[in-house]
Image (cartoon, one colour):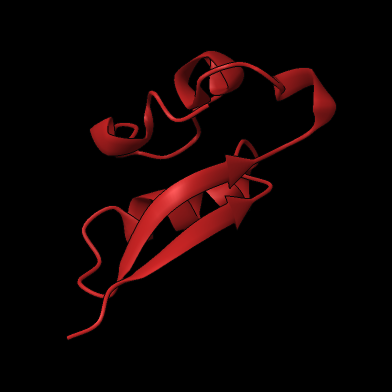
Length: 67
């Protein structure tokens, strides 16, 4: 089965965080990029979200270091 590289736009917001959890182990999609506002530029996903992670599950390990 083909695998597609995808990006999450608005990744630091609630909907973006939800997409991150849904796509974490998806068989068809691999998250390769995360986009957010200018204040998140140059930061890892973990740094950009900080203590604003709103999901009940932990932040996906695979995405923490995506800049």
